[in-house]
Image (cartoon, rainbow, N blue to C red; front, side):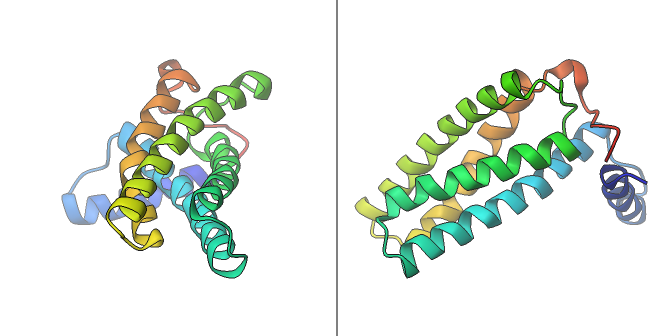
Length: 158
């Protein structure tokens, strides 16, 4: 059984137990996106923590470096579990990255506002940014990188 199928089966098992019905395929796709994004976000957050707390790098530079690490992790996991990849990484990854840069800009603005203007702890500001940027990234990537024609498929070799 593929990992994506296993995730779908687990979610549907609990959905049937709790809701009495299976979950729509689009929601399952979004749920897998959350798992991939959660994993990539953890990479991002750990990197931010290490860069700011152990290496004493400026929080904005550290946030950018951490975000790039998370984006690379996210792309890899998304092509394996969430979206059907065209297999053309030279086309997909630049679009994925451009949307990621948009997410990075949102992240930087949110962190700057909360840390520099309101004095919020950088890790709390990061969590706020994660919640706000999540929807931007999913819908933009679904629309422009992995077209709606492939919805909600995933690669068959996982």
